[in-house]
Length: 207
Length: 207
DNA sequence: GTTAGCATGTAAGGAGTTACATGATTTT
DNA sequence: AAAATCATGTAACTCCTTACATGCTAAC
Image (cartoon, chains in turn blue, brown, green, red):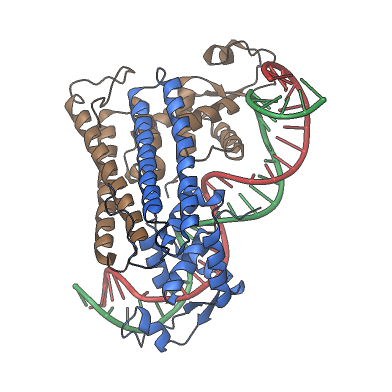
């Protein structure tokens, strides 16, 4: 059975790919990049980090004043509390690449899609396309269910319930349009260039 | 400490208000009315129902062929398996009214808002307005955070992360517009009429 | 006859939050 | 001097899903 929530681990590996970080900072970046409703709690993050150390994907660096931690993000933070800076190992990088290579059904589920999308810049074009298309057909399924449910129960529902459903339906429709635009953009200048670079600019003409 | 997820209990009470039902049917209606991503599992529902019996909000009616269960939704289901039909008690109705009277901070959170909205037809206008306005300011807070986060980190983000944030931002903007329209509609013919009826029709001119 | 749907449950476990515990440093 | 922010952790608990266990009826 495939584990269905490597979300946190994936995100941590992805962020540490940018630069080594300590837990507190990691949490902030995590909350920023994946705009979760609630902020991630330490009670989730720290145990997760420990587990990842055990698995050999990251290592702890407990040298408070070292250059490694300072260079990245923190300017002149010499005398603070002993911070534990986490760094990717070779196995960690390898594992992350494996995760990015997966384009299976779990990747287009609600919980996973956002993380995967957030690291699309480091994902192969083919994988990107398969995930986007998978996500789209997932959303289209949902669309059909919602539409038929609205059709069937329209009579028995009061105005508010109806309005709630209508709004939900429109949200999914909007998501499908968004995915269509992304897929088109991938297909257009997706095959010509094969760069993973940071000046890669997906649909600015979207919306 | 206020319990933060009476969602299921609220929904069950609300649906049983329409008519008595057994667990299996309740699950289907629950999934239909509150369009959750995943379907509610029996592992959640049945223990919840037992707990509600213990609390005295509902009672089990184990008379397989009775009129009570048949009249509501199931035509000619005489010889099926012994079904347990759940029915509201007086205390259950009272508790539901208490729940509907609450317009506190928890009601405009993501997890609770949809259930509350689904039963707006049985909720007072003042409470409806307070919930909608609370929800809106909640969404506006989120909007501001997202906007400033986008502003701050625009440079450091790659195209995909940017696109993800842009899309998330637009979703929240859309939700705010929706809430504005609902609030306007409530205010317009909300003070004049005080009916809770089923031909009450909130914004058909919405969107 | 076998698959799909009806119908009710329990046990184990996953994934996360809240609340607690601790303490330094910076800002007001 | 107090409050906020930095920084790391643990224990208990909640809520929910998955997987299992059981058995009946309708349709194909």
